Image (cartoon, rainbow, N blue to C red; front, side, top):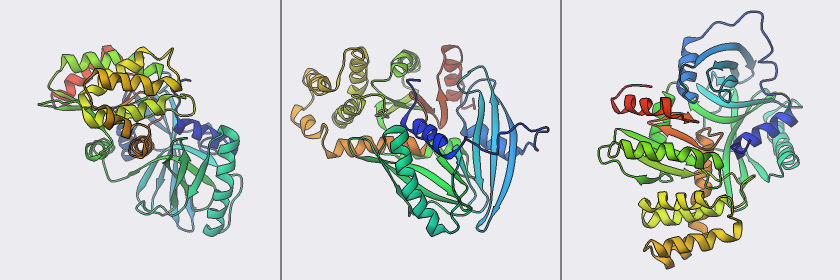
Length: 376
């Protein structure tokens, strides 16, 4: 699937070397567990929104460790979209009151102490990722900031080919399971949490200001992604239809494992946005129009021609393009996507609601409801 991202491919690799996702959790049950209303409410707001979706807890298992308990939860979503329909894993750390969304894998060994656990992961995961994905990654054990309890959070430091970015992960204190995903404080509203995170992030490039904005759309996309190109006309038409009431921002999320020139284009976008954010959309459309013939060597010349043709400062662009400030920014944008649990491009956050694969028949009414101050 061309829209698969680094995040999802890492998860697939871990599943392959650690065991089946949600091992021991998603096996058929003769009877459904109790439908915890707090968990279902949280999942409905944390999962990508799609019309007429239903959510059912199909497994809920509490595991006791020396550091406290965690819950392995499997939630089945049913909707008209085949990509979103299915079972997704969630893990609740009942000690730190944190809920993790992502892929759960079973580790092949059970270290007996936390020091052994740290050493085991540092030796096991990098090799597993290198063998499965030819991905260079290291384990950063002491992360700080993220609470530890029945789950021990850590980071994967991943080499993008242009520097490094970080992916959040956690291992259960009993050493049995690893979680690749994004953590949410259990007492918060995931929608409000994401909106606040995006509003304060300096990594969002706001390219379409809404002078009286009631809706903010933050787009995670990749200039080499065919699906991003295919969905863009709907977003562009929406901005035109509701001009002045929608603020649009972009976060580049180059899929470096499958798109060879995407990171360079993202660097160019950052440098253009530093000079004039309004030029970011024309630059994006330029790259979209050239997707089939573009290659790595052409990105720089195309971007420099764009800068010259749009009256931007060529010297400032040259000092930025593929230099440390833009490389750090793009890697930071990839890291922001990891923190938000973005699994595919394009992904949109609309007032904090996560949206994937929008369709005209329901997307415009959704925007109208949000403009009116209603929930989806």
